[in-house]
Structures are given as structure tokens and as C-alpha cells.
Length: 280
Image (tube, rainbow, N blue to C red; front, top):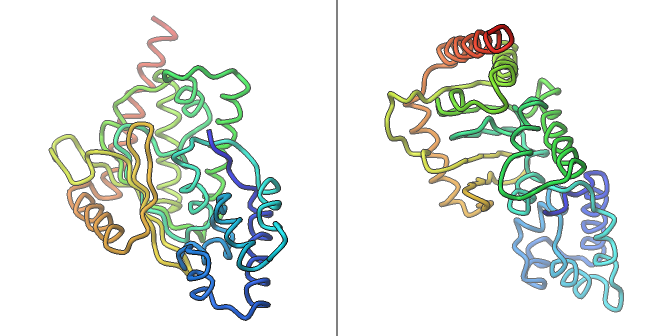
């Protein structure tokens, strides 16, 4: 597991970093050269979007606070909830993004999950979790969905492989609730959803989860995830390649309206199955 930052403390960390950099008369580019930290990484830290690692903090202290370890000592103050190690960095970006476009291959994306769906996902798997650990993970996942409470930002597009709708997680009642939650978000114009039907065959995103994020004042990033692995890409060429793959897959997907119709239909199938289970 990895630590997710306290957003308020992370912003304060960024503000203090910017204040000390400017007091030293350095631009981000100049500090980047002195610390061997990329300018983009520094910019994200100053904006409160990224938690510096221990080596980052030590390099900042050497460059800005000779004889003091202020930035290293500040790190524990940032500690908050636990998330998967490979997702921790992407989670920082997700809360700051103005636009998010996500593709899901087999599971409903985290920010769109209901509590019951998340509980079943996080209770499964090879790694044993105590009830307390599972509940903590569920709370973290549900809190992520609060970014959808603000109608204006972020703008969210979701491409869902049809397998996401058909793979039964937690039983038919849980699936019915989960899919109707997505339909409500789509009907309320909070998200745009596009289903890639099985009939589309192979498509460019078939091999794993992809999340694209744009920001108000920084370059876009891409997050790509596989089995127990995940990576944030910031290199413009790689980000653009992921964006093109997403666009190609979107071209093969059903329209927003057609997708909502299909999701409603599948939700009704689960509802009927749940009723049969209750009254055999």
C-alpha cells in the first residue's frame, strides 16, 4: 500500500516550496537544474498536485535550505489514506484534473463505483485484507467519486468495454444498482459514457485501463494500468500516443445515447435476475 496525501497539507507544501524558490531568486527551470528534478515535476509539486518523494525533499533542502531539512521533515504531515502503491501518483492528479477521460476493460472505473460494488471488488483478490483495511479502501474509493459532485469540473468521459457491464460483481442486485448509478450520471449530463460492444472486436485500448487527464495550467498526463502495475506518463509523445489510441477506440464505441440505452437494458436484466433469486 502507499500513502495518499492530505490535499490541504500538500497545497501548503507547494506554497512553501514556491515561496522559498522565489526568495532564492530562482525560476522553476533553474531549480530543476540544481536539484535534477524535472521542471514539470516541480510545477506539479508547487501546485499541490504531487507529493515529493524523500529524495526530492532532500534535494530541495540542499538547494533551498542549506543546513536545514525543512522539506524532508514536512513529509509526514502529508500522510493520509492508503491506496494501491501503483495508483498513488495518479490519484494525486485525479483530484486536480479539469478533464478526465478513462477507459475500463473489465471493471467499472473507481470514480463511478457504488459502495456495494467497491466493497465486493476490494474484498476479493489474492491478498487478504482485514475488515478494517477493506473499509478504509472503500472509503478512499467512494471519496474519489466526490469530484463528480461539482457539475463544472472535472469533465468526465468514460469508455466502458461491454465486459464491464456483463461481468457480474457482487451479484445481480449490486450490478443493477451500479449500472443505474452510471445511467443517472449520464442522464444528468455529469459524465459522457460510451460502450465498446463485443461486436467491435479488437480495439486499441483492449489491453488495460487508461486514464487521460488535463489540467488548467500544466501539460496533460496519461495513466496506464495492468495487473498490479501502473504508470503515470508525462512525456508528450507517449501522452499523445495514448490520446490517439483513446480517440480511435471512441470511434468504435456506441454513442452516448445508445450506450445509456444498452446500460439500462443490462441493468433491467440484473434486476429480473435479482428478483428471481429472491423469489425462486
